[in-house]
Length: 156
Image (cartoon, rainbow, N blue to C red):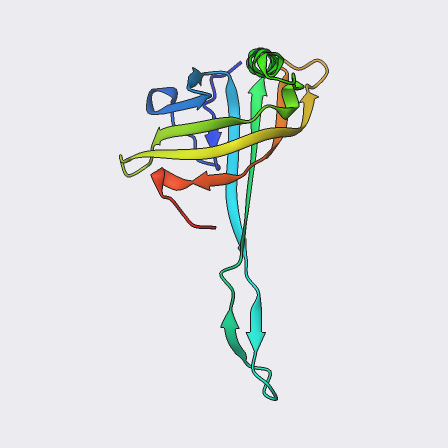
């Protein structure tokens, strides 16, 4: 199996240039991570002409997904299950919020540190090809409250 580096929104920095931490703990067993934030704006039109007159500030719709190698997913799930069991009342591992920090060196040589905040696992699925030498991968779709690019605080 060839060494492949995790993809961050399609960019492949090396592990030397990158850290992904979940709840403050760095993991190297992530295949890829994707995150985005769409803004949906409303508009008001003028009477008679129908021309745009105003637009609202809109609503923020952050999204994220992360793909783990099977061993990384197992450790991730166990950590969330332990955290959930310690809460009052206890929670299922998919009901435990967590933060993700992604730090990497971009192609310009600058260090970027992005925050994906207050995540929950909505859906997960395992995939592997029969007769394949590729490791099992577990894809997780996340429910995200906020995404901050390089520390920027953006009002939603």
